Length: 121
Image 1 (cartoon, rainbow, N blue to C red):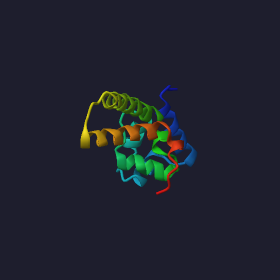
Image 2 (spheres, rainbow, N blue to C red):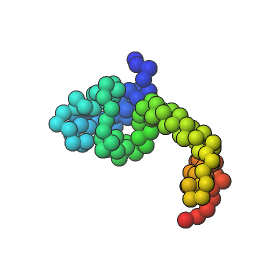
Image 3 (cartoon, one colour):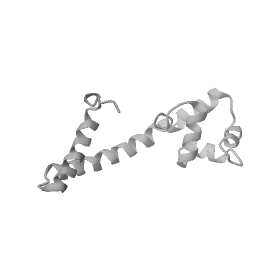
Image 4 (cartoon, rainbow, N blue to C red):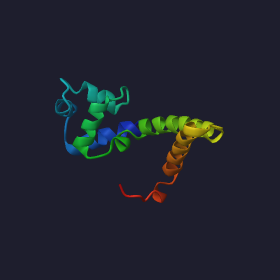
């Protein structure tokens, strides 16, 4: 058995549903079950519409269907966000530019503390 969390989860959900790879492929608009097999083995990453299809079928968020993929994307995003935040913290902008910097820093603060942002829209 593989240690990749994507493989086991998607395959487990499909097996639990009783659907074959071919049937699931048909539901998702494929001509065969081959793409399903590749997704289950993590040999291929599903495109966004297919990932949403899996979510619609299994009623499980994409991030839970492909946790390893989500985590690798999240790590890269968090690293780049931290870089930008550091640059903004060191900004000496004035005037209108300073207002934009402040807005961005507020976004970072709210992102880190979502519970403190209880303003209703």
